[in-house]
Amino acid sequence: MDFQGASYGVDIMGINNYINDLNTAILTNVSSTIRDCSEVEAAVKAGWVGQSADQFLLNLNKAADQMCDTLKELQKTFEAEIKGIKDQMMDFDDALVEEE
Amino acid sequence: MGLIDKVRLGLGKAVDAVNNLKDKFTAAIGKVQGFVGSCFEVARNGSTFTGINYDSIDKIRGSIRTYVTKIQNELAKINSDLSPDKALKGDIAPAASAYVKAVTDVADAYVSALLAYSDKMYEYGEAFKKNDASLTSNVKDEASALASSAEKYTEKY
Image: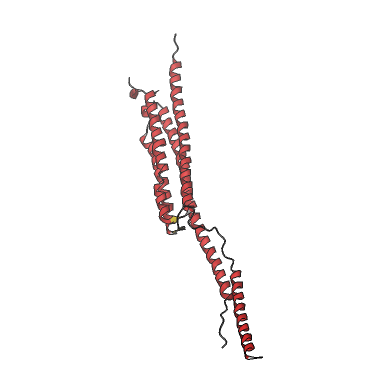
């Protein structure tokens, strides 16, 4: 039987790929979108000049960095949960049938 | 009184009149408080001017909303593009999907906090407008005080 034919089960390679795909989605794609404030910067520079404008952009970029750090923590929590599911399912399989 | 003495007296009175006018002018200048501020030759960021175009406020706010929407669209892709089907089988699979959705919902709500910068932009715009109005009022008062002290000297002869 291959994994696709299973009604219940866990695929270790599948779990690892799923976690990697989520890491890419959250830590790379979402984070790079958060860090790309270029359109906001362009809009600010087109209509606002001074220390206040510069500080506004610094504050926004700082908030974006903090947001990325929090998403990283969220991703770690998720990863721990999925790995926990995998471990629990593997442990269950290990323990279900005892050697007689 | 001789002629020379009369001229001297006349000149003295004229000098007094000029000096009195000068004193009044000095007093009027003294009533002007002036604005105390730092003596910037260039703005702290190196620019030779500071200012804001009020029309840009809505554009900046719009750009922030677009920025937040782009982030939220990336988060939404996680639920639509990724599936645990190749990792988990059984009821646990949709449960894991629901867990991922809960994570992305939390992230989505967290990211929406960036919209606070759109509200900040509105507040900064209002602050600029109030400062403009306040400064204008003060300068008008100073101009009025100066004007009321102005006294032209007209020749008597």
